[in-house]
Length: 288
Image (tube, rainbow, N blue to C red; front, side, top):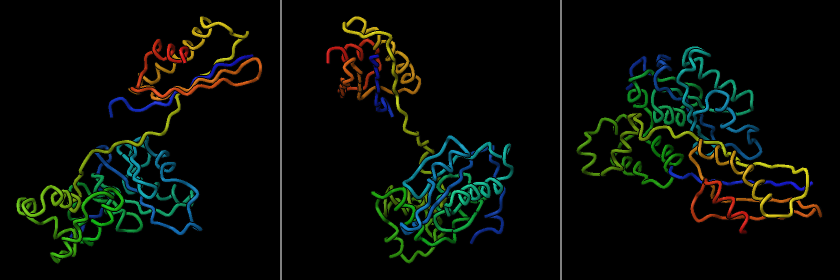
């Protein structure tokens, strides 16, 4: 029997520290983030599992930064797992079970968690409000690591801070903001925010790639445009509904028709603008 199959590929339409500084105290009912950092390994020791698969076991809200670092929104997990330190242990255990060696850090800001995970092996939890003091004794080279992973195209000002004689993030964090801005501008203040563990932007969840496709098997061959149009409508309507729910549009439309001769008639339509109108998409498929 002939089969109609439509697949749409879419694009987005729009889109010195205090003694308690590392104690397990933040409440995860408020903003709280876990960072997993996987140090680079030789290819012969490549892990068998990705950081994304680990993050998905704990929260749907995570942001991936390359293959070596991921930030997870863990607020609310205390009701399931317990204290922040328990959550951190569970994350590390899950990674170990999958053969992945990671640094784990929890903090009330993404930046503090990232910096600490990059610089400190093992597990650490920063008490809310102690982000700056927890990072203060870390080497100024933490700035280099941060920018390499998260801002590869950014201005590596850490070399300037080294030339100024800075050895720790605490020295950069303590600079008067006005004086720093006068010397280095916005980039200097950005570096100071990193040294203080202040977030530069909200977490932007990484969305798993989603395929929008539908197929239909017919009870008899279709040889006219009218019944073909009816079949395409039945295929496109649920796809467009899903696209609307996700605020997306069709950028590429693939149509495959399985003929009675066992041949496959395939068309690939690249649209000039994203669409999600059933009639327009159907007309384009029929005209082509």
